[in-house]
Amino acid sequence: MELRTYWQILLRRWWLALIPAIVVLGIGLATYRQPAPVYQVGIRFTVGYTPETSATSLYDKYYSAWLASEYIAAALGEWSKTGDFAAEVSRELQKQNVDIAAAALAGRVVADNKRSMISMFITWPDARQLEVIATAAITVMQTRNAQAFPQLGPNGAIVRAVDPPVAGQVPLGLRAQLDLPIRVALALGVGIALVFFAHYISPAKGRA
Image (cartoon, rainbow, N blue to C red; front, side):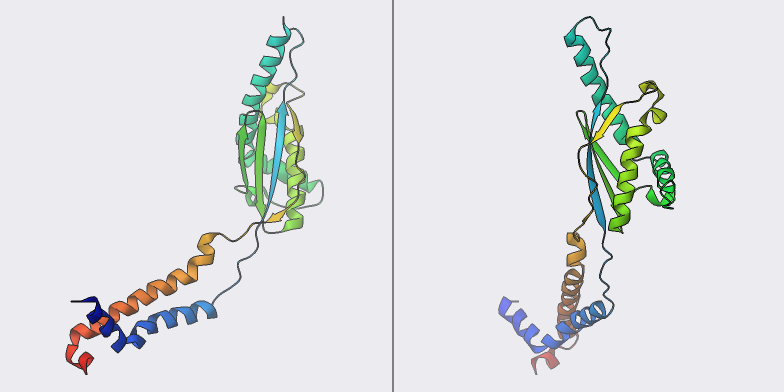
């Protein structure tokens, strides 16, 4: 069958091809709800470890401190993603009369580390509350790291936040933006299949 023949079949019943797409588009527009905004804070931390004053040479003293800080940054980055860290942040928020359960905070923190730096990202649906949560997370990271890792000693590691806890709105993902167009395109494909099916079961009528 030539392409021209396919085109003629579609022209005879073009309305049938559009019906599923129109129905899907109408339902999609009628039930559409603007996605709730999501906000994110990105904080970078530098991690330090005091050099051993009893080292025999300056090279050994500072090299071991740098090497230790890399291991500590990796460990603290993983700790920030745990339920224990969420519980500590929740307790810190309670001191400020902000009641957010640890279970609500769990899974909201994503962290990575590179060398002696930690990059932490926290997402939350409320921008003001997120900045309060981020500030509490900074306090926990700075003051309670020895509680999570006793091997750091009583004073713990030196953790410094180098970014302010400023919340920014996360843009909609590509999937959310293309969801309705993709559904309409699929419905149009179904409509085209219906046209050829209608032609198959009643070709004479289609040529009339």
